[in-house]
Amino acid sequence: MYREVTNATNERTVIAAIVPERPCGHSLVVIDELSCAGAVKMCANLNALIFDFVARQKTPGVHLNLWIWKQLPLLCREAYSAECQWSIGPRLHWIRSRVLELTYTAWDLERFAADCGYRGPPYRWDDSRRFVMRCELDAAYFHLYGIGRDDVDYIMDTFPIVRRKDEAVHGEYRTKRVILEIYDAMAESIRTGRPYQTRLDPPPGPPTDPEGNFLPVTQWDPANWPPHIHLPRSEDPAP
Image (cartoon, rainbow, N blue to C red):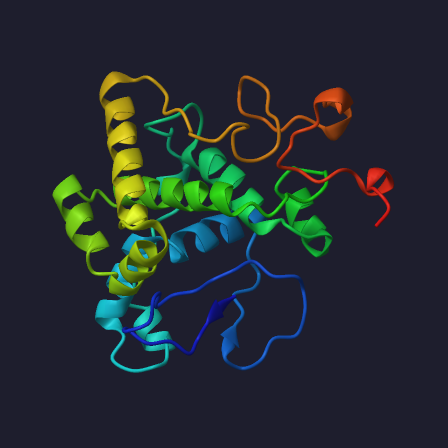
């Protein structure tokens, strides 16, 4: 689903999300008949800053109409099936872990999580973790679109509202700084062949095996439960 009413002068021109199967108003455009992998790709791609940068150049009014969408540069399927240049395994696996944690924060998206191969509780809402995951995805998409560092620097300066909010709260343009730092770390991983190491501990998504496959909840250590994931329903503490 994406918001059809927008403006090139907004903080973000494109806002998309994976939502439960519920009725939506006419200003929320539903993209249905997607596989789980398709939904993950679409959500990550539409919310990337590089995609937003292009969308605002193409948006003359306050509506993201179909004729505008036909001009926007979504990545092709092959871009996701290729091996990840900065990590181990396909690019889609790296992206899926982050989209899953950013999206699955309530039980009403349990079916989506199961389609992604994860059958466990939703993730806790943690603003600091969410910020880093969004920056990682933005840095990754700048690489996937082949955007050079100087151009990333320029593009980030075309989001004045993001900058103003950052400076008001943090005293600096934090989003730009962190994205550039992660972009550089990924570039170094691509150059050296050493996998990129996320700043998050534990890493995004559920626990995985060495190949990056999600471990079943039954194999998790109850005494060392991942702090970014809610307890199973039967173990939720009483209010």
